[in-house]
Length: 460
Image (cartoon, rainbow, N blue to C red; front, side):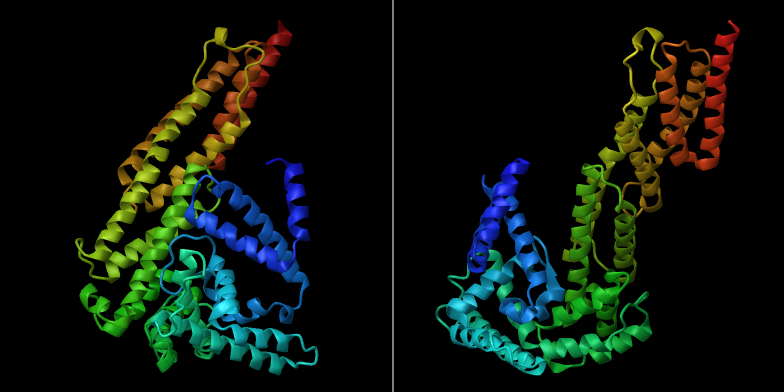
């Protein structure tokens, strides 16, 4: 879709009434959920709709957005996309279908009264809070009735399967909003290391009956994970409650879901790492690999997990997925380097021969990626390929750089620009592999070789 087409699409979507925009968002989210040939177009339109709606949200007082006000307690637990969610998470895309279901049939009277009261300009902040809380409780009751089969209408007309899956969790959060707020207020803003002191404090703060239900506990645990610098450490709370590191005893407590939540989050990071590496995007790779390394090691060392158990198989699967995703990319780096630095015969070099700067930049990033992998190779099951590749790169880059300096010294006016560009690429690789001091030394050697050739030409 070209720029002019996108501009026309934005103009058309912006002119639609808010209800029509919400309806369109719901339909396109359903199209994406179901997949199919139109999913790509649906993603484009949905992205533009969200931009328009968010811009409108920023310019509109919160009291003019009934759905946003009602779902405010759910905000900390929202995730983007329509993929799988773990306990304690809700898809953002599910909120609008749930709101429309509540408005249409789930809690129609309560929502109508709520919207009418919010239009009163004389409402104080306290009165707005009271009105919002009333509709939240009404929504929670309607959701519970539909989920339990008390209300025969159920969730038949709610829309997407993802929204049907998320609606009980939304109802649980709305029901225990005050308890979650009290619990969150008792926790530190950030927990660097989840020590026994912190675990005791969290356990005491969580001792609220409404948070101990199977529906509410995952959200209390999610709040703790959000405060942890290393979210995988939430397993220490489960170990403490079970008074054992044996996975059977831990899994037998309600807090065993903390381990499942930690594993799910690590698995999501594996997917992010795989996608980033495939795209050659290494901005956050080191951080992701460190989190995965620490998390996998922590789960293996702090929990007695059997290899044939559900958790054990999940950990093995993650390590295998990481290994499969990274091994081919790591093994391809020497080939990238050789294509750029290989010595070409003079007859193959023309005035138009060039070294692709973008490819040099990408290859330097891949070399740095291999160096980063060395720090985490053992836990991520890539030790052998990383060690072999790193050794090959060290030897080849060092020898190739020295050879390029010698060749540059003997080059003529026709081949010199290309040889010099190759030498500059080699210096960039040397800086990544051996550090700035060695790269600076080789750069001086390259400049001397180049200037020496010039002096020789002038003398001739």
